[in-house]
Length: 98
Image 1 (tube, rainbow, N blue to C red):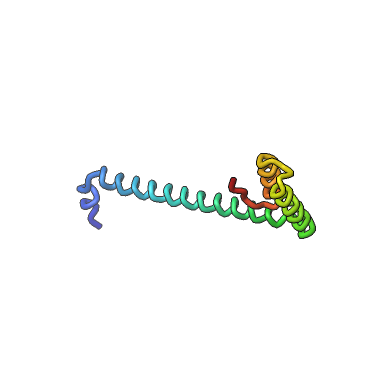
Image 2 (cartoon, rainbow, N blue to C red):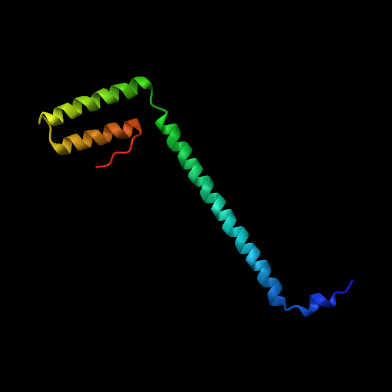
């Protein structure tokens, strides 16, 4: 076996290729960790949204309907309406866009 070919190659080329591989593996590991964090976050949101019973969901929807009727009739202010709507939507696990 002829080892002279290895000794003729500059050390920096070998080290550079090794460093590139290490950097690539680190990027891949970071990408996989980020994907896993996103997956866990989605699962947590899904678990939260399914934690409310159908009975509670129905009651909250009825409460929201009454709240909307009161607001339309001018019985409550917009600030009160928005505050209560946000609370109800949070309990339902729905995002509220003010």
